[in-house]
Length: 287
Figure (tube, rainbow, N blue to C red):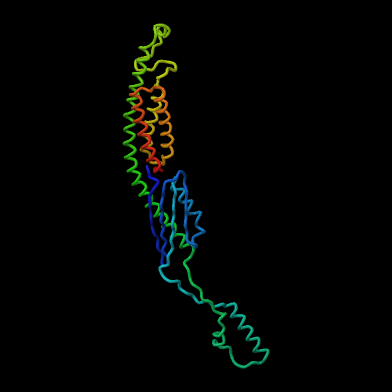
């Protein structure tokens, strides 16, 4: 079991660039990814989202990526060789055509600034992609550790509430049997005669829909609570399944209290509902 809330951070560093990825997850009914990338990494947005969707199934995910240069941008001087060749060709042509004297000297070209271009060198795009993905993988691992750690605390609390529910259900089973026995004892002689040979076995509810008979609801409650206990120990995302199961348990408890509004039953139903609400509060944090 994992919590939907957590935090993870990791960094990856190259010779000139450092990438830091921070992940924060919060409660949300569905998977909602909020991504903030530096301008240099905008082309990687869909790839980052795909990785997150593969690892997380539910919750609001906030991703912050920062990029910092470890050194100032280095500069490189570039010679426009094509333009230089045109200059040389043109000057030689002019020398021949106009019978000019002298040789072409390097100093002639120093005064031509358009032959040279100064540019700032950057890291290669592929290198930065590798750094970003490495930092993202580390941040996701740390996030998962955080979510599992908090998930263990949630699991302990939910297990405690499930144990309380497990005590309520057998008590309701006992009350259901008492109600069934009382219904049998209160039957009229005509009903006794009509039902001869078809009386329920000890501990079973009488056949037919009888007001106050909560046997079917208690059977379903027993099954639901059993499934709930299994889900609590599952390693897969179970938040939505648990939430649905709690709705079913709540529905059965409501039916029990309406069909058998007797004080012992009402007290047990209230205790059960209290446990359901406590579990539902925690399920809002479970993936």
